[in-house]
Image 1 (cartoon, one colour):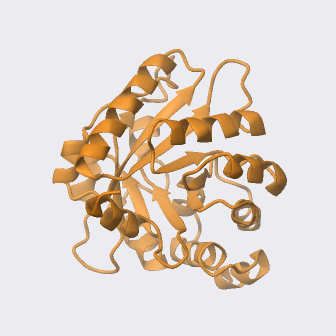
Image 2: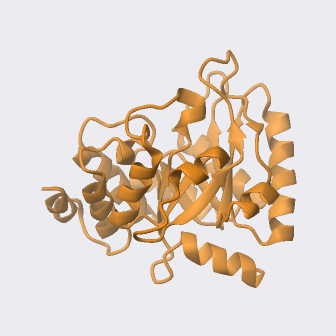
Length: 263
């Protein structure tokens, strides 16, 4: 690993724990200015104050989210996009380059690949291309890989394990996949993947306890953290939910103790 990539990865993963709390805020392209990210600068400010390790933003939001003050936070620029209006919304295309992300001051880039989708072939090709360019520039790559084909259960352990392995096989430094629902099955996903695995959050959960229990189960299974958007930026108190997550992810605390932080 080049020194440049090592320096950047240390801005995304906690040096002591090797784990991370990433908060994606790239939903504006797919779903519009949904609740919690109408004011992107305020959203970034809150999760940074809570202790998140990094945020994920599309290139046009980097300037809008830049604060120039407060706690530092890592920046991952998202390269993929599609909208919920499209009949093939699972087909992602590249809308940014690694070079653009470098000029924006990114510590990493991310891509989204949906296995089983109509454009799987093109997305895998683009994955390979982005991975090569990232290696040339020493840029960490977060791959968001999901099973979204017809009749596929994206939470099935075999599907998730395959998605995680694709991330590793094609050169990602971190792979993001759905949680399988229990520690035992997710531990098999982690064991078969030689790079750090982080979990996705999916739709907003009914309770914060349910969310924290999912994160706790994933960490117990060997996950290196989370990359969760709506369950963080749509929380009643974003600062407190990130602090609660930090207790679980970085300090090894349990759910009940983390819930006390929220109050």
